[in-house]
Image (cartoon, rainbow, N blue to C red; front, side, top):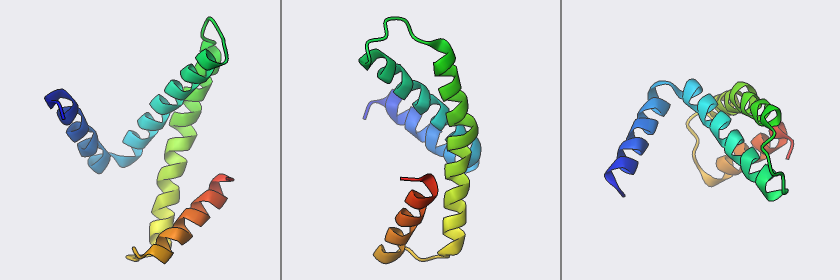
Length: 101
């Protein structure tokens, strides 16, 4: 891995460990922006719809990131210390149900 990429990953993991909610919110906002830009380009839109893009960023930052963070905090409390395959499957099912998949 290149030194710039490695340094970036180390910094991201440091932020994730020390400021998990903030890091997850920012990450969700950035990923929401990237996915919407790709979706707009693939759908043939010539000029980016900035209002739509901004709404996606705000939704990712204000809802998706914090919701995912607190959902997993709750699941970790419900299944305290258990990391076996059956527990992981239960967590996945509950998370999928909570998200609405």
